[in-house]
Length: 147
Length: 125
Image (cartoon, rainbow over all chains, first blue to last red):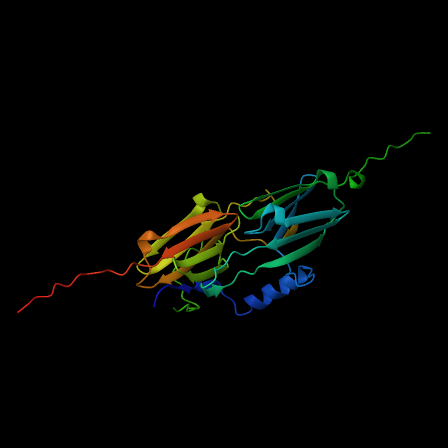
């Protein structure tokens, strides 16, 4: 027999029998959007930073040209295609966990962002974005008139 | 060829770093066995591949941007490291493994050992 067999390495003290169910529930609550066979999309972190938001999404193997990001007000949509290079003709699958699929995910942001000032870059399979708050939504000081 | 899953076989315990099990594709070709592991946030310098007896381990430490305070926000990308291990069979050439890392994917080629050829002298008489 030639080849390799894979092991699951797991910290024995950290496993919960409900772990998988909780992960599935979290995935559903995440608000993934399935479009025409698309999967729910990448794992995403979003947090407040300064005057706007920072985002990172895990997109291993996705090339920048295969990503499409759109912003409309407070709705951010990330679409992409995971191209999985697999076996050539005559080769044989031994384990297949990665999926070659289109994905789309829409996030409702806590405020509208300045679409023209949004920055995005991909490095080592991680999409990083800076989403500055729209000027129209920034807190304004109201001058008080004296009579 | 066998690709056998061994659930619960915990041989590596590193409780100080949160580790995720990366999704992997494995296939057998003419040149050997190919492995592709998803390790987003990991660059080539942060990948460690080790062989101990017949266990090939792939570890990666992710370098991900994070906020100084992340109390507010939606968070579901939590992995800071990855680890995955495979059993090598006797016919795998562990000394000739090739590895690369690009776009958050670690790729390995485990070549097949060339069969050792020995000429047997035939004596007469």
